[in-house]
Amino acid sequence: MLAHTFTLSIFFSAVRKEIVQQWRTKRFLVIMAVFLLFGLGSPMLVKIMPELIKSEPGGEELIKLLPPPSTTEAMSSYIDMIGSFGFLLAILSGMNAIAGEKESGTAGLILSKPMPRWAFILSKFTAQLLVYTAAFLMSGLAVYYCTFVLYGAVDIFILLKINLLLLLWFLTFVGATLLASTLGRTVATAGGVAFGFYLLISLIHNIPRVGKLAPDGLMAWAIELGTNAESVAVHTGAIAGTLALIMIFLIGSIVLFERQEIE
Amino acid sequence: MDNFSEIQTTVQDNAISCIGLSRNYGKVQALKNLNLTVPYGSIFGFLGRNGAGKTTTIRILAGLAQPSSGSAWVAGIEATRTDSTARERFGYLPQNPAFYRWMTPVEYLDYSAQMFNIPKKERKQRIDEMLQLVGLQSAAHRRIGGFSGGMVQRLGIAQALVHRPRVLILDEPTSALDPAGRYEVIELIASLRGKVTVFFSTHILNDVERVCDTVAILNKGELLLESSRDELLNKYAINTAELELDNHCQADGQWKETLVKQPWVNSIQTEQNIVRITVTDLACGKQALLPLIASFGLIINRIQWVRPSLEEIFLKVSA
Image (cartoon, rainbow over all chains, first blue to last red):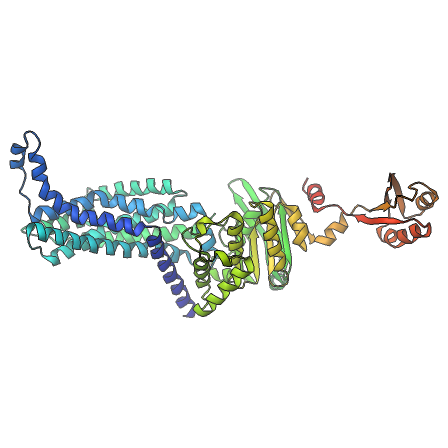
């Protein structure tokens, strides 16, 4: 029991260190800035897009084909933006997590102490989970404020739901990048492997029967919520599938890391 | 060594015990059936050329690599099992220690101490103690990213000692340092004598000669010898006394003829006022030489029994 408490206290120390590291290395600020941009940029872009198109030759005709700026469009743009760039952010900010420490030698020094390898891996994931939860909260507030100012009231509960779904979808890539970072001997290799995982995850929804369990189902659900679709399907399969995938990535990382020789 | 109780005794009596330790990387045998014991309280030099298997052994002891066969114990706990308990018993410094560059020494030492469940109040006291020991008090709150090689190495020793381990394992602690940095680190290691068992690998033989009391030589993954430094130097001693006579004395004379007739004298060589006397029986020579020289009224400025350097022994053994 005492040993168990001790191990947990090491885990919490490691999580604290990870969060301080995110702050001191300015990574936290960069992530927050990017998410703020997602939150503020999407409704603004939707608002100014018709003006931009109009200023181009033939834009007057083109504008008639586009839907008018609205809350729905702003939400759709926000979800699209996270869907298009979110995975990239997860890869870029996470590929260094394990591979970087192995490459630099910091992992060797820490793992020669009584730090269990599972705690080393999970502390990285937990810290990222906390940072991205804060980032999604901030981008959610930004998109709420901006949409409210530009288009009128937005249902905050729907927005919260959308952000939770996006966060869960995003965590799939955080987990995949963590596994890639454990697999890779260098940061560059880890980045390449993580991108490979992204492609594989993107392909899952095309597989018959299994497809409905893919993380992309969460994105589809978020879009339905954001665009006030008449019938919003509850994609519980996608939630279960995504959670299972995240667990597989984490367990895979731990099992692999336990067997690895550290330089 | 296959008797269980014999193994138990060896493990309990020694700071480090390796029994039949082997490590293969594909077809390459980095370590071949290593049997090694490091007595408590010693400063143990683990010598070998580059690629001899020193770092492999140390990484196995530190729990960072697994052996292909065999076992190793540190302070009585098996280090070759994945259980992390053994790691509480030793401090480890790798060849090129890497720290979180954004941290300060105080922060890193505090983080390290947390791994050993040291209460907060005690942590502060230990950190101050360690910083003082390694002479980093003035840099306590500076970013590690801006440290010199010597400072990094000293911080490395501090983090390895912060939990007051029984055994300190150092992998080539001086190889990347300039002469001043090397001197600092070797002095620091020497200052630990009697407080902790130090096991350090190196290929810098001067360092070993200065601080180690026990030595092992590893070559191509095989242990060539393990012995106390003095025993080793005596074993390979060249039985030669070098005398520097005063300028007024004749290097050639009757004393030389008398000396060469002694049964324990092998040969005598003279070069100006330097005389080299090689003896067949070292003990006898040590006892009889000086009285004999004195009986001829010769004035001696200096007498030295020439010993081979560890470097010479190392080259001879690992050739």
